[in-house]
Image (tube, rainbow, N blue to C red; front, side, top):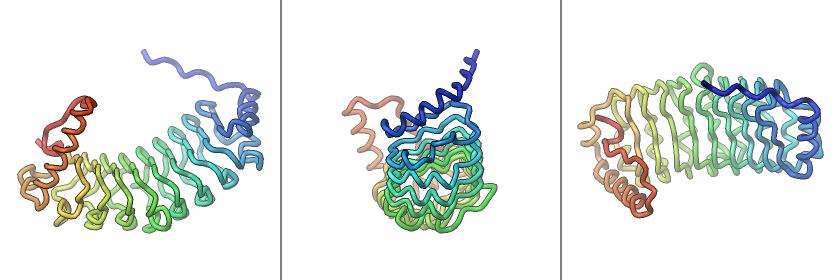
Length: 268
């Protein structure tokens, strides 16, 4: 049924990709069977790299020397075997997108908070619930840059306090964790438009949650032990419904509907 994975390219081909990256500014090493970065990948001649695609390898770590990629804007490391990140990742000051989905990360370095241009951070399908996250991991200059954060499928029972300080966050995905409550501080995320907290253990939302989140127009709570009627009685729910209707109407007007789910936030 499923197609077999292509064998990794020979060492000579990988070396050529590294050499080419100096001029193309793209390090394209996806599905190369790498257990570690090849020689030269963190050489000074790659300081002007814009994109590094290391996805779908078996990397267990990134070297501290990756800090040489000072101009890097996109770092794709999904589908590896990473258990931690180097603290030097905080020196990638130009980074705008960091994809770390489907690894084995148990913690994150607090230096992530130094990434003052990072807009998208994908951390879904890791093991962050088995370790511990620094309370300030989403603080620092990161807090004024991050627009999209995906923490789904991590077994998380709580969230770091600094998540409430992400002042320009628009999209937050917390599905498939073990959260029994959402921190009240999430109500301070006034730019938040999309929140997916489905498949958790939530029985209610924090007091006044929907009143404060004046930009929220999409909320998913499916698979939580939450009563739909209780949600509908929550202060701010009718205003949320109106924003949701406007969003759906806009999609219909633009002919980009697809399947429209008209349940109440996924609750039956």
